[in-house]
Length: 430
Image (cartoon, rainbow, N blue to C red; front, side, top):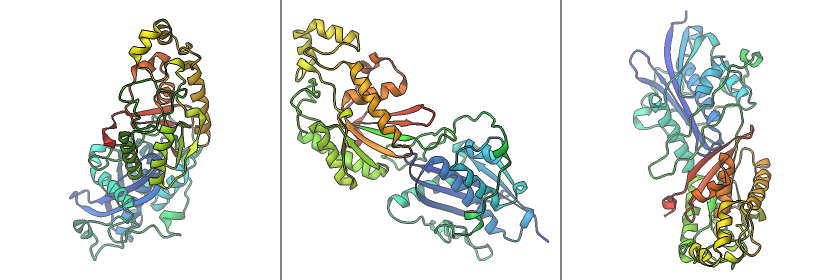
């Protein structure tokens, strides 16, 4: 006769880039003592936050079942997660619409009888154990190794317990093909139901090591992985510190020694980030040189796109703002007042630039769903990407400042919405 047994499973998962390098963590806890009974963690390669969260749930449920293989229907598991999406979908209150989530939910549901598992959402601050395991797994993957339990964790694998589940303290290896947690599909009743309103799951990537810029996006449920554009301004040229107009109609300057150093540090940053899958550059020399340094570090090629070039500032090329005010006062006043006004001498208006950037954005996003693309470009195109994503008016261009070699991010989702992350301070590249 099976002996009734109750355990708590806490699980988490995250992605550094969403999608990006991802991992999960799960811990089985004795509710009476609060002591951990088993741990599981694994680096799973490039994936989204939601995929990693579901993988954490699957590992946690498999760990609980493996600990008490003879409990049968008498085993009761209470799952605690800070992912609202996973908790609500597995509880049957939200419909699972995204094709990537359906098989993962089915795998989780097949591990134990549905009546044996209950779910509870908890704040992230209460899920620190699983969060830590997920970060350990991602750090291990970043370093090219598998997650290994600490000495204290390894002691959890007692002689009286059943073999640990995949990725756990005992094995640290992927789930074998054909195991119930890996292959069995179990239809969920909510697939045939009308959905309840589903707010976005705000769970973002777990914390990274100190000094590492936070990455990752809180993805909206069932919209799929976004197209993520990383916007890198080129390194300094001789004109940059003097704040001279330097567009596509001027001298096309090369990087200065400072600019080359910034490009090297940018390359190190993106190598550590590990999410860039493609590099696209403006045709201007300062961008091509910056992109080449990053590409060499990442082992990628560089594709040139004319849509990423800087504004043509006409007769203002090479001048400071004060010099333009002195020589072309009326033209400058008109330019500042209207995005339809071009600089003196047949330059490009901000409206024309916006049309060009929007067309470039649409091309890139259409072929980059679920991918992370680095764009090496200039001040005006980057400001325009951000302005359009935020739905801000044209005058917002004059209210942003971008440092040389600074990075911004825009993630574009299937419903047409965008999420902006600004990392204008270039200190992380120094």
